[in-house]
Image 1: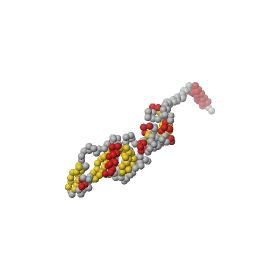
Image 2: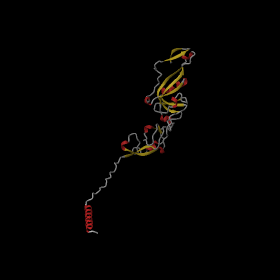
Image 3: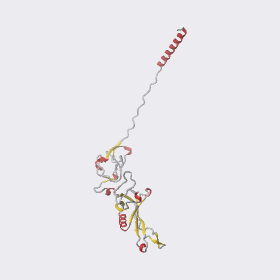
Image 4: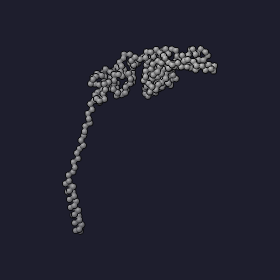
Length: 265
């Protein structure tokens, strides 16, 4: 090998060794491990909740309930807690659900009732009466069958006007007896099940005041009753009989081609 090449090779080796020496002598930065911040501890309280979906009228048993941790800030005075009621589960067993519960929903005493009788008496609001009326099973007098339990309806009566029907014409009169009445059940169905949107039955059970119950019972004897479904926006107002003091309206009766105004009463 030529002396010149040997000189170049020697210089390269010296330069490389010097560079390696310089690199090895530098202080390498020390990587600090990331600090692990523990999550904040949220105070929890055991709250009695529904272990599964509970329909209205359900007789609640022990498997239907469970204790579930609940944030203290979200606990209200209406919840049953293990701290305040250690025997809360045993006390609730045997009650009847006055309204439905979702799975995991806290159990509240306001939505429960204890009754040795039937569930209808347990879910009926205080001061109200459950009255069943006969309806058309095919839905011609029940909004096409689309009236479900917990809907609000108007009760209409259709009857024969005896005074106006003395002639040759048959005069039928329809009038609204009650407004904004809650439907408790259709037939034996107390609530919508499995996503069904149509309920049919031979009877509709209504929640009525004692005065309304008398009105409806008498109206069934002298005419046919129909239900008119109300909008959800219009529901929530207590219905009262509207026969007394009702404005007098007229009905047009045609006899032998001649129209004549007749009183509806």
